[in-house]
Length: 178
Image (cartoon, rainbow, N blue to C red; front, side):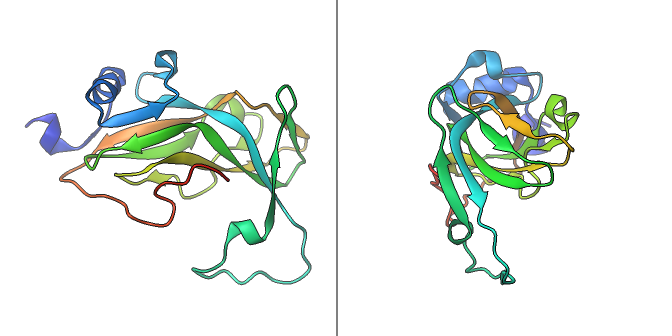
């Protein structure tokens, strides 16, 4: 049975082959970020923090995170402070484009999880056919203020070759900013 028909997590060599063939596009691309079975992605300088509100927030298909957050762009050399028990949104520096044969899983890195930092608390599935920067749902589960430093390789993307082909055409298919 060939790799094309089995579905599998891509190894370092298969990730490199998929990048060389254009099935995976990472911009900017750092070859040193490719690990044994994933590629590390970089935290950009864009963040969204949640606006405190006393009213309940109705969670529906129409509820937008943009309505309940404020965007901050951190100047070069500065950092973002995340208090204990708080969440913010971040976004990767890299734009990721996947063919209709590849999907992915976005995960935190264990070195940061051990500090109490959850990088992607939910919705870690990356659909085939996307062409966007990855939004990170960052939560501080520690009892320390955590200093988030733009430029840190904060998360990893695992690639899966699919059975068949498909393309995501949803709202966030081409999101490139928070």
